[in-house]
Length: 293
Image (cartoon, rainbow, N blue to C red):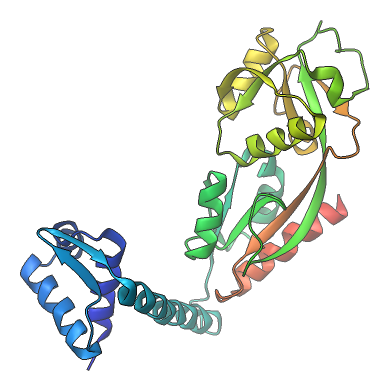
């Protein structure tokens, strides 16, 4: 008879494909781990791993079986959350991932004021990690641009449409303009975020639409851009959400007038994960916050 402990050990070994490391993580001996996996394979009537010298790798049968094992543990976790929702120990945790938390601070702050009983965990991630975190159920929600996340098997609701702005230092040749077009910026020195960030991916799309290759003088994180722009090092693209919180102060924001310079923002979740009351409250608040605004 196959036990949950065997499935747990199989799942962990499938993730690491390393006997010594897995045994250490599980606080058991390598012999006990190997015995448990061999027993599972005997029950199933087929090997799940390819073994050669000291290496071990999932084979085709193992990869197929892992999908069903993951479903078992997902069902157990969903069951736990569902029971917690109808008992006094209601699920009070919400986890959110995004490219940058800075522009979402007002919304999260006011949500916490309205629902102080909920505990929020927030993570900044690359585009690839955002998608992975939904697919492996490690977070409840992702807030990102509609084009940032592959839609297959995921659900989403639009929350706002962001205009795009050019941020320049005071005294820049464009500083007194109300709006500019992307084709006017082909000779500018740009300060970009690092490759892999959702905002960098969107900026690359804008330059592609404008039909030229951006002259990037520096790649950095969010926190450096304001000071570098102010010093005259370069200019940067930013969003209406960043402008609303004055993320790049004390620099000037100039609206990009091209019709394609509009970014649809949405909240994403994996519908296979149980949606707790806490998650429902957050999702509805996030949507209504920007509708009301």
